[in-house]
Image (cartoon, rainbow, N blue to C red; front, side, top):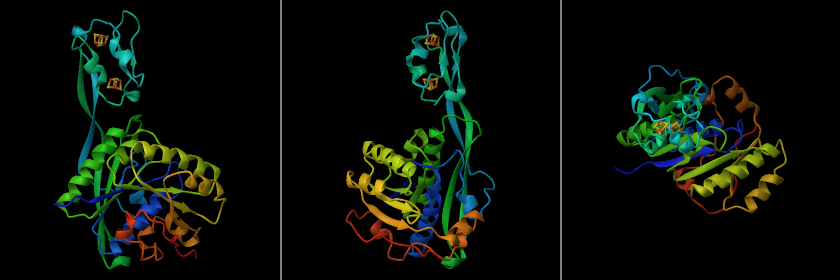
Length: 307
Ligand code: SF4
Ligand code: SF4
């Protein structure tokens, strides 16, 4: 079975409209006859389901992280494990047993591998849940797309593993259900959960805004995508509200292009604030379809209505 096309929607700065764009794109692809799955990878505060007026219901799957546990009878208090932990998640005073700080632990297992005495074992703990919604759009003739939502338990510092497990669930579901395109809506920032969301995607839209913060974070995100070997295109949201010069000069010096610009829209803002993006009449133009998603040549920017 053909693997679905995997597209990330990211951008660095929070509040630039990543989720809104993801939903508009999902609806657009649905209109174009695609079988679409939107995967909310912002596991610390997933909100695509709220913007779509959905309820999460019962979790389809739990997600787990493996945390280290000390076997005191085997520990020689050498402190090697603490020296090897890049997260500084182990406190090992000289001559005392090491203490593991779970909030800082990513569950990488390096400490277990480093311990010469086999005094560390990894223990699975539930750290989040994964949900599935069938989102039916009356505006698109009662067709549906799928929404997978990853949600981390509150208070976790390291949520990358939950993003990976959410993606794995989404990919498995997509293969079984003949999904053509998966959209991964990432968290803000360039940290570990965003990296987990970007790994393995075919392409990424970077949604930004014409502000100094938007441009700054866009530059960081372009660097990250280059390191991860992920191709990018830029979407400028609320394009008529700020100064695009900074973004244009960043784009000029990068291997990317501006794919589209979305003007400020009261109608869009109202639908967003009421969690009614599903019923929004305006959207991306019809020529913005799957065949263009992976195209790398320059083309005209698209617009949505700014009523
Ligand atoms: S599993 Fe990794 S992050 Fe956690 S304590 Fe061990 S080395 Fe540190
Ligand atoms: S490396 Fe092993 S033996 Fe040494 S302090 Fe850590 S757990 Fe104990």
